[in-house]
Length: 205
Image (cartoon, rainbow, N blue to C red; front, side):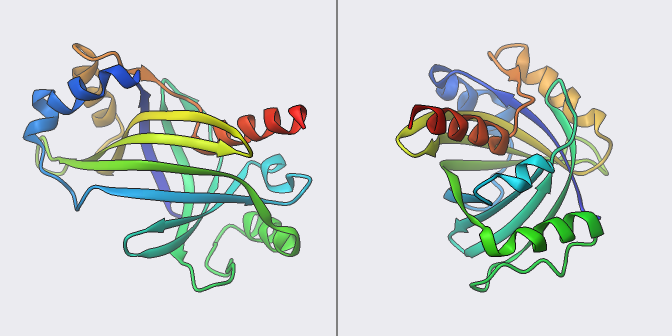
């Protein structure tokens, strides 16, 4: 089962310039080109996937469209270990590659009722940290918004994703950045925030 290990930090929009100018960020090489990512999250009208703590999205990137399924997981001080399955989108949802039988069954059961619930659109700048042999971290600066019907909520996040090494490396890097930047641990994923926004939109209809 693929496992995503990341530490998420939020920051005020006014701190974006300072984050980009931080010596650790400026010294880290870019990982690929900066890009705009557009995602749509799907569920049944009754939000059956959300009830089972599953998020399903399609994300458009410069290289095409990717289908991703994720499971919610406890987050402590922004640090999360979350099962994740990604594959190229070929025009239809495909769940055969998901190796967790319960998750695959839930998605198959929901297949015929899937519809868009909310979307995200944000600019991503990714940097690579390799502070010591055997350690590799991707730092992704995301700025944009979550949208559900007419409602919108800003995205200002720094995601530190562990590629190689121990999870403590994420905390070490985050603590170093937080010495001079207003970064706060963010335990809610974009999907969780999207569902909250969609729920408020539903109540206002």
